[in-house]
Amino acid sequence: MKDERQDRIVAPSEAAKEYLTFTLGDEEYGIDILKVQEIRGYDAVTRIANAPIFIKGVINMRGVIVPILDMRLKFNLGVVEYNEFTVVIILNVAERVVGIVVDGVSDVIALKRAQIRPAPEFGALMDTAYIDGLTTLDERMVIMVDIEKLITSNEMGLIENTRLEVV
Image 1 (cartoon, rainbow, N blue to C red):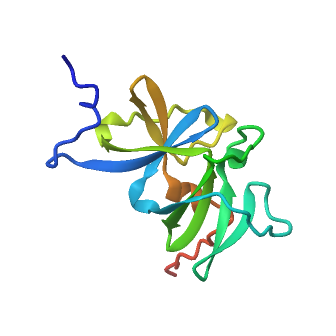
Image 2: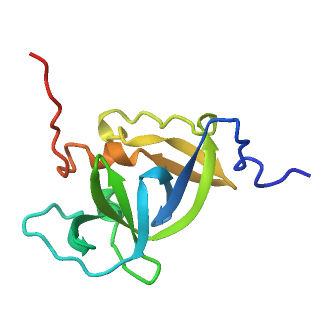
């Protein structure tokens, strides 16, 4: 009889990464766990005037002002309802602390790169640059997100592109 967890358990000698999975609506997403600083319950945020709709505002976390992004609004997934399962995942990306609001945290999984399939191409209809790929766990499809690429994208406007150019 096959162990159902066999696909998730990876021998130490194989290159594997751990991912934190979370839900947004009916979909499940995964992000590199090394980018996660902590997971907190959702609290009120201080709104910032003229911010994009997906930026809920900021919180003061131990003296650090942290922008909070609502991923449901960012991904256009419909009406957002906050409940006791709603959490904020605090991330450390591009030397900056950012929080993302998600419907709930699911699990920590270990995957080999071969277990992640490339994202389909949608052309100009949809920007999939931040989608690292797709994987299947127990009959569920998980969308693997390159959270650093998403957070540092020009569209987010959170982190300035300050690369030095050689003249």
